[in-house]
Image (cartoon, rainbow, N blue to C red; front, top):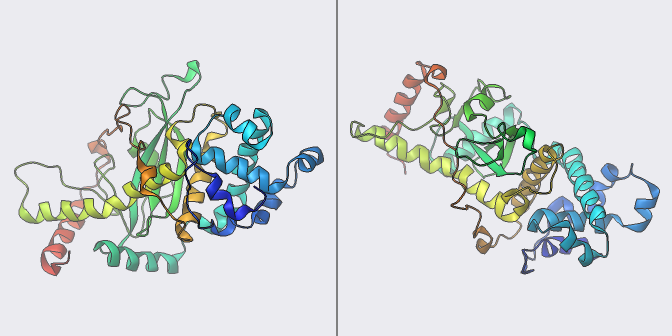
Length: 328
């Protein structure tokens, strides 16, 4: 367990099947996290090496196994497991977020446009936007706040990915009762220079496009637009699936405090980017159970009052573009 290149092998599902032979890029050498963990007490340092603390945390994040179950595997107490998860999550956000999950500069945005068009055939677009509801058990006094539109308790995360399926903006830990449109309006994404792709839960803007509402009156090129947008939007749907498959703590955060949740979710998104950037192996079998049917996704349409009438012209121009270019 002391060799950290095997950490993703330790981050297994409950039957301890292998997670892959590849490393995790910057986490192959856990010294990258040392500055974020060095401020803690000397007693904790002397009893649990850095590599082991990271291994304990990654195991829990990857498997969602209870602290009491992980405890004997590493020869530490449940409270120590909890401490490792908290401290490593904070260290990942502190030290790896500036490298792996940050708002792009202008030059990077231009490159993102090129990549998105090359991969998904959608012009002037820097990414796809969507939300993720993570099941939780909130305190009774906050039960109504965290009850989403489908009747189960969750925290809401808004995320944006590029054409490669890597996150570049994440806003998290909103109560599940909030609507996607409200989260978007309060985020740093509002009024982008380039186009983002969303679904019906987001308001139509000249910088955020969504499909036409399906009915029998849609023209052929409107149907074609819907097909192109939905195909391109699948990049974030797949990113969420891979995120939850690798870091199964996000399937249900039962033993995590509301205070820690934003950091934990953000840490998992950063670790997703580390894995994707370094081509860490992904086993398709991990996808099993990542979309439980008993927890349907809330899908409240954006209020009409938030729609920008001028945006319809942008959507019409896109229809003309797809009709003319004939790509895809």
